[in-house]
Length: 300
Image 1: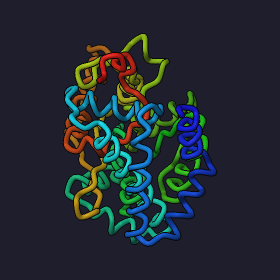
Image 2: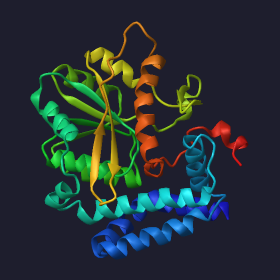
Image 3: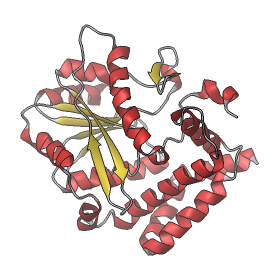
Image 4: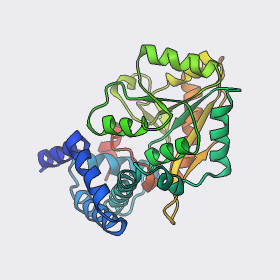
């Protein structure tokens, strides 16, 4: 059974899986699309021993202070929200006006858009994988936001297609690498905005973990160096879906990195802002990798 679930997860994240989802998104009307999302969420959430379900369950358990009365229901809620987000993205991504209607700009979003266009002061904009980040990013771009997006260094399958969708806007999509990171620093020095996500765990950070939700997590801190080199603040943001189906981007107060403090201290200040965002709607945190794998042994 675990191998079958792993193959399913691999297919979902592959180019073929995403192309199939694209076809469903374009073909199905919203009511049917959301029903399919709920059906698939119910199906997958019952596969308790799959790596995907175990990772979501662990992350939700920690976010809920290790008190999760109905883990299966919570995993289903996460997966259903993910399905709704995928449907909304693939149903509307070729229609800028529809994307703009899904993301009506709030005061905070308008400030983010204006700041990205003014070139008065650059910023490093960092996000967690909350809700429909792709629709939110497209919406901001169609409303006029500019800047450079740092994507994963070797995108495959779903990430590759998502980056192509993002590139349909005026945003510049650049895979992370030594050269593009230096370009990002130069761009921010010139007043530009650079965007990246900072809550995906990786083994490469295990030796220098950061505290996230009260526990050590193998999360990056190197982005703080970029902000320090460019002399710009870090702006934590988070996508969120409201009950009426619209998406909003929350913008926290900027974090001004302290050159005298450690990278860890500065990064944990940023993570504290992201914790607040995630706690608003834990089921909208769409992180499919175990952020705290050492806690698997404690999880009921």
